[in-house]
Length: 302
Image 1: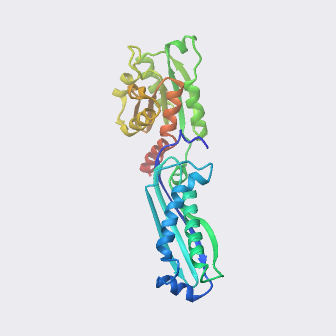
Image 2 (image 1 turned 180 degrees about the vertical axis):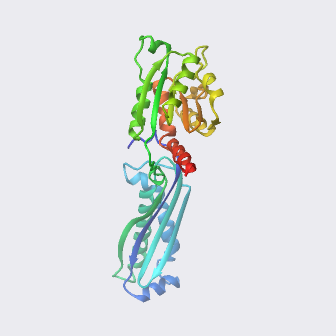
Image 3 (image 1 turned 135 degrees about the vertical axis):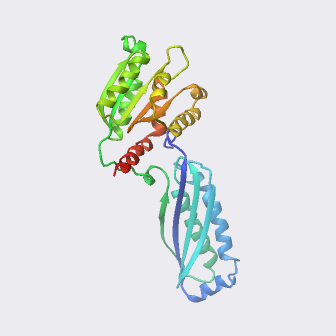
């Protein structure tokens, strides 16, 4: 199956339909009056549909097992057509479109099986997805102006040439995927004065996004949070919470990271972990959603 471990849980909703077309009005009347020999067509087909939804990952090899938190099955009769509508909801990392379509097809197939003794002209048509919600496609980001970023690596060993930087490069790569322009990429030692200088430099160059990586741990040289927090005009604790929550789902030590997020003027300042994995996962946790800040800021200007 496709790897979805990097994705975030969101509310996912999908509605699918199937059309069951019968051969005569007598069949519709028999359904409505519960006169079909095999029993209550709508009730039994609903039960079959619920089972079909639950069995989807067992029958389709690339479908992930996921927590189905709601399944609604409805019928609409118009002439000789019965529209089956199946709506499914979950809060998970991947969508429920296939589950909804599978459920709709099983409902329709069960109706066919129950009706074939009294109607030889039943046809199943138009099994399709009607609508879906959730995931990144439901939250498109359209920024009217370019976002300019500075990426600063805080590390004594890397600045001294003893190690190669990987976390800063991982951040740059992620930003480029979201069409963020990298104005500066720099490596500095873990020094509070140098960190504050980078803030002033970013401000003077009208930078929109300033990201530090490193110095967020608990050693005596980890001073990035102490250097940045007094400068923040508006902390954004939700970003910090999202980073730690995402990390904690993946390893138990994420709670020890002291990531920072806040605004200085119209510039978003982030301090992310210095490990390559920690930096990459932090970026996965908050991007591209964090870029919505600039839409809010720019919207407030007009």
